[in-house]
Image (cartoon, rainbow, N blue to C red; front, side):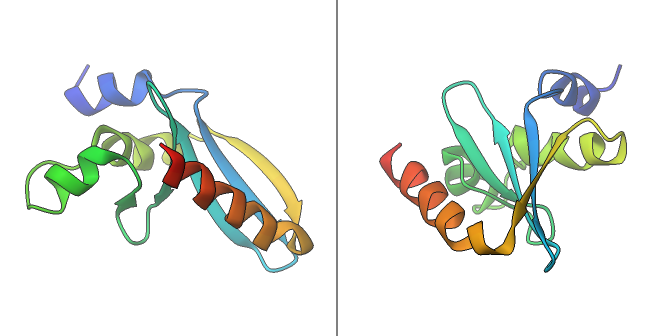
Length: 101
């Protein structure tokens, strides 16, 4: 098993796609060791501390980003559907949660 597969394996059943309809907006989160993190696979972004200290300085991607694409490809995530009416409240709560950590 490759290193990325080992990393991905520990995040199985911990990735969530928050899908908003009818706009088809998507927000990804992953449950890490201590917190839940916001991910954006298109921007290669994660809200974890490793992302800020390592990934942005040109070192390795955080383990959350390393595993996300494989988990998406293998459909190892939970899809939770919301109405677009809930988007801004959801986003506000997610940001508040991230800032409190």
